[in-house]
Image (tube, rainbow, N blue to C red; front, side, top):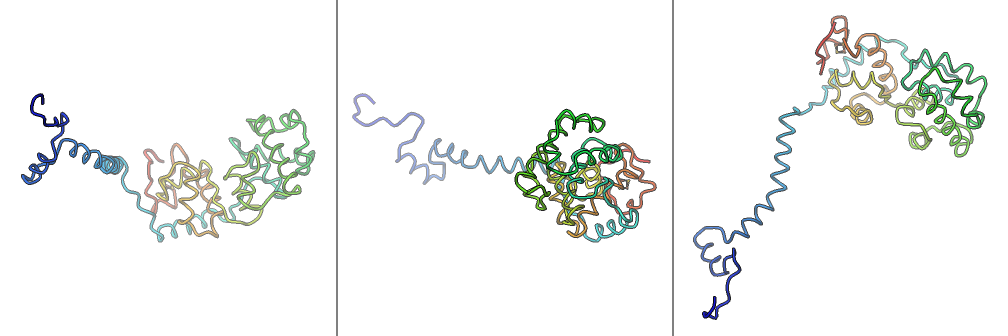
Length: 275
Ligand code: SF4
């Protein structure tokens, strides 16, 4: 302040003495301190708000009761005895190729195409060296034939280059093959090598939610959510059971709940119309 000789306090801030007096009076030391405290509390408040919003919109998921799961597995086993893959194959390579072809296509259609394909290209080396145009022509009726032909050629080239022409038998090595994802890898591991794996296709995706086994929607998250729910030795056959049950009873549009053997144990999550 001119003429006083005393340093002027920063506008908006209290001097140390004023802060001490305020502290004695039981009030906050300064506006700056209040702002700092508010800022410090912000992350905690935001987290709490997010938790509340999540809790309001999405009720807490209760893991399925093991006794209910055991009862459902028993019913599925009885309802679908001898369940296995419908894709015709004589070795792991043929199953791998048939599985690639089965994307967005029926198993019946794939089984119509593969005999001629495997007769002309009997191993990974011949498939890797196949002409793209020739492969496309042979598999055209399975749909997405350009991408599928490329995937077949590329993954077979990887099998020849890195695995001596044999389909590898680990998830890691299978996933490293071009054109191979977790679903295809689990089909090969479970059905060609007897190594348990949960195959999450559209039926498994739908049924696992309706049955209240998970509320995940992403196939990989569903696979990992089902792992602790279903005994490991039944992972492969469990996938076959759900696929068959989805095709025969628990249809996407109108599930046939009135005749479903699982009905007493099924919470029918998300089902709005049924027969
Ligand atoms: S009761 Fe209905 S929703 Fe549940 S599995 Fe059976 S058909 Fe599907």
